Image 1: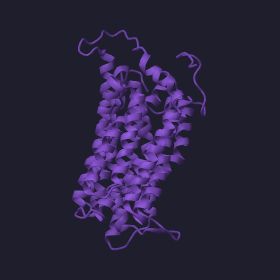
Image 2 (image 1 turned 30 degrees about the horizontal axis):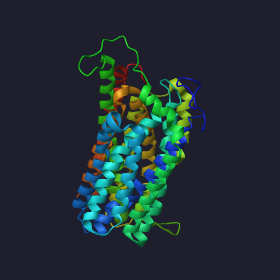
Image 3 (image 1 turned 90 degrees about the vertical axis):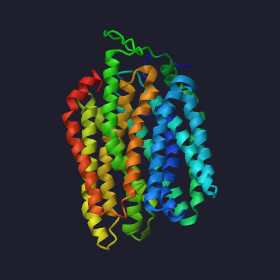
Length: 437
């Protein structure tokens, strides 16, 4: 029997609600499938399908951008029709179908499989994060730490996926790699269905949680209060700066994937490496650093940096990562294949930024969004990933026509400038948030 909402906090898994373990492993396997395939997608298009860099970059950008764009529609579907639990379930089934379709050889199956994954991820991605947020009562200081743990699950799947699916694709057969990704999503669905009972408190909270009391008169247009509108405006600000962050960060699967294949010495300590494996480095650092960040946020409690300050730090770190790549690009274009440790160092710095932005962004949206549109606003936040991935795919088209130091330098400059602007906007954004940290 489910305990009444608002009773003693659910502490069943590492001091967090029991449902966090179910969502942790569900998302882990979904990310195994997504990143496993994404790790070799642009390489498959260039090497197996014969696409040019520009064509492959455009298809890649359109695909990964659409994956995140569909999150808005997935949020609407969950808020108005299916509910969050069923949206995740249906989305997972469609994703698995997409990966198994990609395992077929004809070119029409390639495009059909990508479309299935776009639709399925749009249903699953925003709503699984919304369920995580709903595991916690408003004001629960464990929320940011919970999202950091959840984010570690995301990256555990993102770490394993490219290592297994990527090697199968590059060393054995491209289509076997796609099938491997489908198996991963199927395992995620099994985990989700088996753990359904643990999610009941979150499902009930989303269905029954009352709107926060406010002294501000309701806005007659849409029924939102003035405080609601300000908080939604804060989400838009976070979206804009997150878009720039993802535009740099997501080049790991596009520009830097081609860079690894063409300019990096693919051997380390006598071990043969695959270009698709480098996508796993980002995830490996998140797995290592997530518990540290979760502990720091829990330890600091109300003294931790505000969400806008964390976003400014994220942009600073990703900008510095691309500053590091400027000399690496110069060496590589001089005809010498560079050490893979250059990319390892770059991804380490990037991950310091990602852990300041992504789990924090997921958490803050669940706190800022009015209850009845929380799925929609989570989709709006994921739209930043759509725009960022589109920019990342577009950038890959320049790798064979633009000097690498210039290509990396422009990315670094944009991110560092954005970090400065975000730092200047910390106090105005905090006012929009109305006391939400």
